[in-house]
Image (cartoon, rainbow, N blue to C red):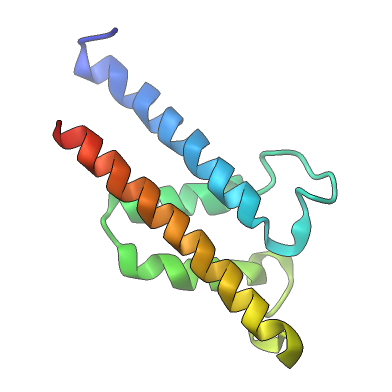
Length: 111
């Protein structure tokens, strides 16, 4: 175990990133990972999410999960009516996983 806080921060940041990557890759906007894209396909999204969490900007996470579809050339406002409910459920489930992760991390850091 490394007791030097300067050396442990980058390692901790990387561990957090990889844990968040797992959540985002299961969210998988447009199914790119499922279709065979590399696991780093959504790293920009993961990085943006991590920045929001580090800045305690929790209210910006849900809009990020919705609006990131534009990064991939898709407009979330143009989802067909029959898919809107499923889309919203996917966003809400992912947001819930992120918040559970965030709360767990903060509880563990208090100890």
